[in-house]
Length: 224
Image 1 (tube, helix red, strand yellow):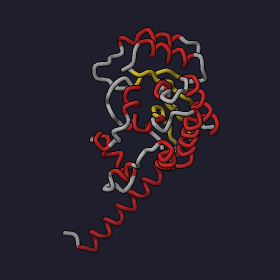
Image 2 (cartoon, rainbow, N blue to C red):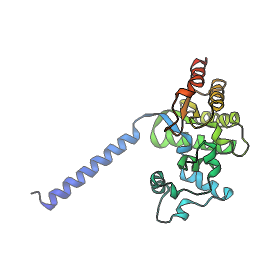
Image 3 (cartoon, rainbow, N blue to C red):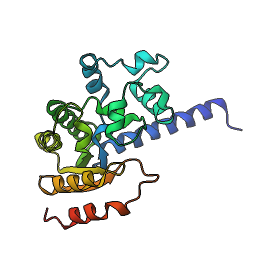
Image 4 (tube, one colour):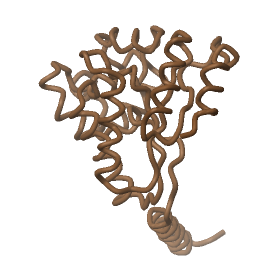
C-alpha cells in the first residue's frame, strides 16, 4: 500500500504529464476538414449582438450555468434550454427541430456579421489552436431570414475567410430537409463561386441522399 506522500507525488506527476500533453496538443499543427460556421461562434461574438436583436443571454435565462460552454453542452441534450423564439430559424432549416445551430444562426443574418464571424473564427483557429488548414462549411439559405440573398451570404463568408489568409476554403452545404430546387441551387452556387466544395448537411433520419443524386452529380461534374 503506497504511503500518502507517495500517492500524492504520483498524482502530481500524472497531472504534470497530462498538462504537458495538453500543451503539446495545442501546439501541434492541425487541419479542420468539417467545421460548421454556425456551430463555432464565440461567446463574445454572440453576446455583443444580443442587445440589438433583443436576445436574452442563456446565462441570464439559466443562471445555474457559469459559462456558455457549460450551457451549450447541456442544450445539446435538452433543447428546452434554448430560447423558444427561434421559430424562423427552425423553419428555414425545413424542420421544427430546435438546436444550437438554429439558435446561433440568428446572429448571422447580415453580410457584416457573416464576414466578421468567419474572420474571427479563422483568426482563433490559427492563433489559439495551431490550425494550418481549414475547410469551413455552411448553408447560405439559413442566412436569408432578413432579406440577404444566398449569393451575398456566400460572398460575405468568402471575404471573411480570405481576410485572414488561413489556407483552405469554404464548402457550400445543401440541407437534406429542403426541396430539390434548393439542392440544385446550392450546387450551382458552389460551382459558380470561389467555394472549394459542395456537400449535404442537416437532419438525417428520413432524409436519404438518393433524392439529391442530380444535385450532387451536378456539383461533382462542375469544373470547379
